[in-house]
Image (cartoon, rainbow, N blue to C red; front, side, top):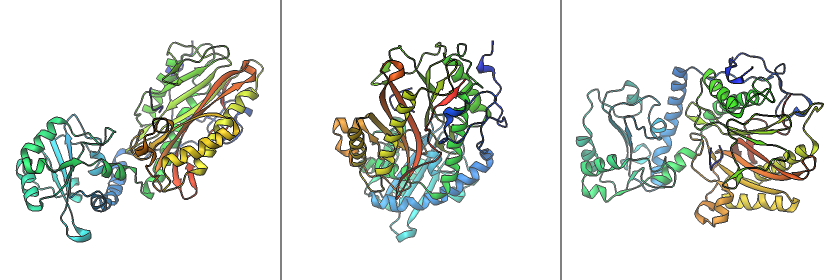
Length: 465
């Protein structure tokens, strides 16, 4: 998602996950063939597991993640870490520190304590409103739960932690998600001495969420594949009839496609539109989202910003389509050259990135390559994974322009996921020199040799006949 935003009516098209749609691979010359009603998806994304199986898989990941907690607490000098979940106001951390199931106990509290007993020194206590069988595999969780007003003071007095980490710091919501009411409850329950030891757990939270385990990767790849499949269909004649279909109707179709695919989304799907001799409408320095009433016409360049949610992950995906004019078999050469500029920007960023490099170093190196080639470019890539706008190092022009040394110095973590989000602005001869934005966004994971896309990137326009 863009980090600053947001009679054959296609909204009535029934979405079938088994439908056969054709298109060549993402790196193939899609300009040679239109992705029309008769064309199809050659490698349809596999189905995600049923919900019960997803829970079982994610609980397996959780066991590995719990092994990370004690070393991270010691690294960040926390002797106790407390996550509080409120009924009707879930903490965004809960499903990543506890089994990913609903919690409706009023206030459910998950406590991690470094007992100091070597590598096996992590004590995990769940203080819940109701007994939950699955919690017993991860936490101390009695059949008859005791109230937090008893358990929390006992834990504090037993271990007397110097620093108690809470969700009260950091820039992002997942880092400062503890409510004022729950903070007051913890303070009153644990006493003034413990309250003086409350600190933000944001550094621990960031590293915990930005550290990926190998078992997650194939499922995330499937989720990205689902994103690609839906996006390609949305930007095709299955959904779009030039001169008839509106921006809003494409968006409605996307919602129905999400429902049929048994996935959600974490932001409203957005479409942008560029047209010859139409001035680009911008918002905060970026191409603005198109009004829903706009009708898609021949010759338009369409841009889709779209992501799906499933299995505790979010994806983020931006792609371009061109609506063919009468007699055209592909996008004009100037538009193809504009896309090639964005591909060059992707190459510059993904090729220079390495684990352990500072985000600012990667940004400067990639932009230097663009300056050498005379390409007008912007980079605003962000962490991805459990959340669409994740926590971790961002490779972002805004940090550079503000001179935000703290964010520029953040290091890229091995195997972490990144939304490679960026754009170039190129004059197009066939559009009388009018500048055209080619904005792209692709999930990628970091290897010793740079970022690798989960799915092949777009190198030619999706075509609408």
